Length: 398
Image 1: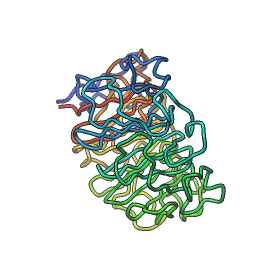
Image 2 (image 1 turned 30 degrees about the horizontal axis):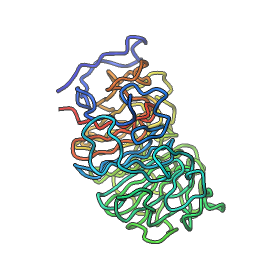
Image 3 (image 1 turned 135 degrees about the vertical axis):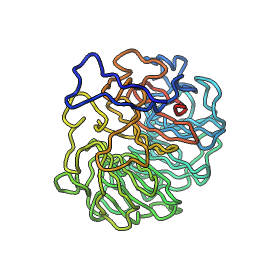
């Protein structure tokens, strides 16, 4: 199924733009499931109050299997919400949480000192169906559970970025090293290896295998030439080596991709890098590796532009990115990826030349406001619709 592109009527047609066929990314009926409060379809102030159903700016969500569990980083409430089984109706209450002493409680590190079961701005989350990994961003650490938690405030088994569970300082209060992190926002499990978007250190860290001891150092780095440097764009002009705000990492068709939100682009390595500081082969979202402007220096987006892309996922024959500040999802067919390739799919906006939180209207079931993280399982996308204080489970278009 294809739909004809229609330009945003409130603005002139972008220079050089022309009509062409685009493919819808998401099922036309809207999300099959919305979680996030009593009024999840039109979430206003009430979701800010913590409960078993409400969320405040969720920035991560993942479905561990077709029937669950479902894990959500309820970021603003500094907790994980966990459903033992995939919910079967809107606003279903979670079964338990990690990070707070009760469902009605909130506060960074539960208003105490950090430990193995507290959180401070949890963001990225990933599971292979067995282990669970969470980027505990403002504690400057990554937490690992060796099996998916099954009970309230189950402590993590391993911490990296800090020497133990009591640490919470940027780079351990020292200089950047292979075993420190700073505002780590994204995590990925690829071929049995752990990858962390160490955003505040402007780098991506790679561990061979899954760390089993607290504070294990990373084995390799991208975005910097070594493991003891944290310069923006590797201390150079923007190019294929450095990064500004890396957030998510995916692998598809043998390629490695990193969303570099601060440079408004996605970096692509045609083959998995095997040495530190390997420059990427090309980028999406910019005309070349030296460019970094929001929407390519235009107000409106287009098929080739991005504005702070955070989350990414590979699903079916699609690579899909959360083009966060444009409040849309954009997609490329994997086989058509290449330098400056245009997106051919769009979700939550009527076309590839439109933007706007909830399409500049009140939130409705099929709109998005600052989608921060996306993951996928089978034909289902799990979208952390952060600005709407909700999570959507949405099937691919058919």
